[in-house]
Length: 200
Image (cartoon, rainbow, N blue to C red; front, side):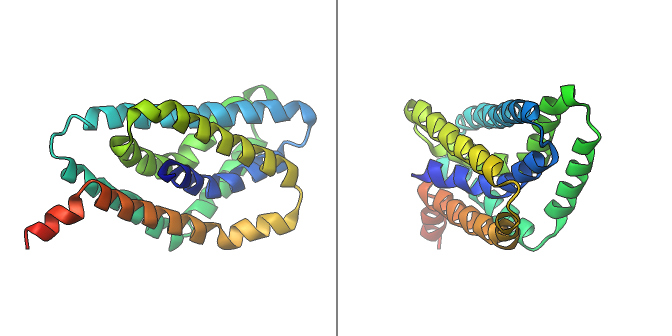
């Protein structure tokens, strides 16, 4: 369940990026490169987070790892009170418009990593640290289903202005809520809060 909400939180801003991509590349032949780029970019982010999480799992004191829960909280607050993402999105779209058709996949991968990399890793790394790796196949399947649904909805609704307005208006708050809740959960689940209270 935590994995569901952690990945769902990262798709709120990514959904807007996908909508902009599908709205920019309107030819049917350009749909497949966008989809492939989205899957590849997200797979790279998950792979990097899994690798880093595996290394950090070797740290003996688990309560120390709980401090990583502060990272998604800080990123969520920063994104909510900043217009930086919107400005980045505009730059990315401009770059996409100038990209040749044969490089759409690489462009989407770049947008995924550059536009969502810091936020996604901030959630994935602490989550993979605490998750039971025996259930990773289920987690990856869940991620794939959510991403597929996000891509499908973005494709279908790319031309609906009201949908874009909704995510532009409430997307930041939705992301903030998920990030803060997940960060607090990590702090408690790793025993960080309990350990600090025991020192008082």
